[in-house]
Length: 253
Length: 383
Image (cartoon, rainbow over all chains, first blue to last red; front, top):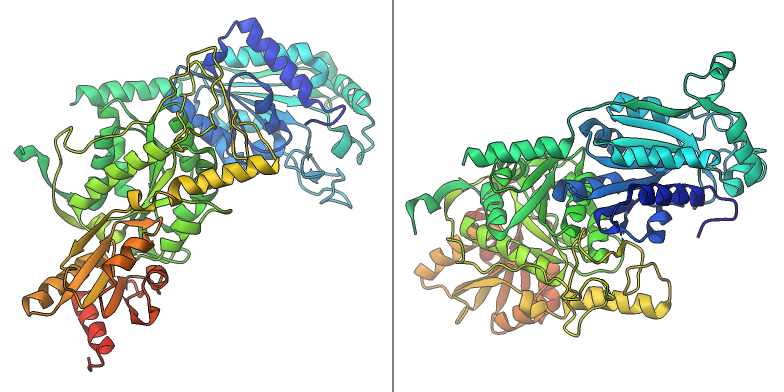
């Protein structure tokens, strides 16, 4: 379903490697996706899978996790899916610190509908709905997730596939709401209109324009985008806290 | 019947208690007048029974969350009103398409838009039927007094679980906020239905969307041995997207036929003095309370007036309404909207000229006197 050169397949590959490394049982994993190119990922995995509504994957996932806290819930989302129509669910899932692994597959564009600007496109980008140029400022997913209360926040790119596997693995292990943003190239709808080049050239940009968090290179060139773990902290997890409510309520009976 | 089973509580609390009786395991909601008490009551009561309650960030996510929870095997419910119900429609359509059992309570208030939050209305009958986009069938039920609210709520869960469908409970502010006596049945007094679960063993192909001959689809809980895909896209028997005409046709026929072909099985109604009635009132929900008062009052004076109270609104029981009203000279639909169920009654009862509407839509509860006055006008008498 994905176009030639699309980065989403690399994200899927990294995710599957992470699951394999963790030796998880497929029966314990539920993947919930929304709508868009990214959302089709749930149709390619042999887990319990839900392909839901645009922007609402985290809301469905919250019901799954609350009802059966023993399940591992993974929610891959696109940038528009997660942060435009789904922005409210994103910040509230983070605020609750519910144990869900959210993966933002950020290609900075609405690919499936033909190349409209998203909240992660950024100023100056050309899109079918920004034919002159985009004047919308973009969110910084890391800052937003941190501010909303996510207890694990990390970013990498499809060029850094091994780091993606490692970050997803750590995110799944993390007990709480974890966010992994993976920059994923869309040569067809984004690169083509924005002098981004082909898939390989776009990935090359991920190599040259990013740097590990706190690197010397970042100090010398503040425009570089940092990769790595931005937030990793222990905080009370939502379903654990609700289990205590159940104990308290049952004792009061 | 023990004394502790007799309660004097709000209709909203009755609905919540009935949901617990039916085996509710998960509730997600968002505050809105006049349904909030259902969420408040369940926030306290659900964890006492090991169930789970969550107040979500909005109405949309509440509806989504119950669908997710239902797929893991829980009996689920959400409750809202007016604007909140409008917001839930997209996810309600998803539950129809994916055949996920769930119960949605709409404690109706005046609309459109913010309307009259604190006053009763029955303006959402057609929204309940056609609120989400696309051809579909749905089950909508209602009740007029607290004992019936209890029984119909349990019934809603039974139907949702049996036919893998969302069921809408279309209550209203009047019933929701009235306090009256209710007797909570003992466990076992009302039979409970759990969803059919597949007997297919792990490692053997399980087709989540292949209906049995009787139209039912055994489920497999997320987390158990069968892994499958659930999508709001048109899908094949595996749950994977398909645009093949024969697959789409079969899916659409199944989704609609499983409800529409069971119209008589799903019909719940009560009748009062219909045997020899020359004139029949048809009502549902809160307005039935006034209609019943009028019927009892006029019967005492020898007038041959009867009442048909509909508890299943959709699928609309055309055949039953036709039969019950066949001998009546006039049929008067009593409802608190600008005429919604009356249109369906006109399709059922012939000639449709003998069907009249007795209604109010000004936010004021329709009284027995209102109905009496309208009856006099219909008879050509002055008010």
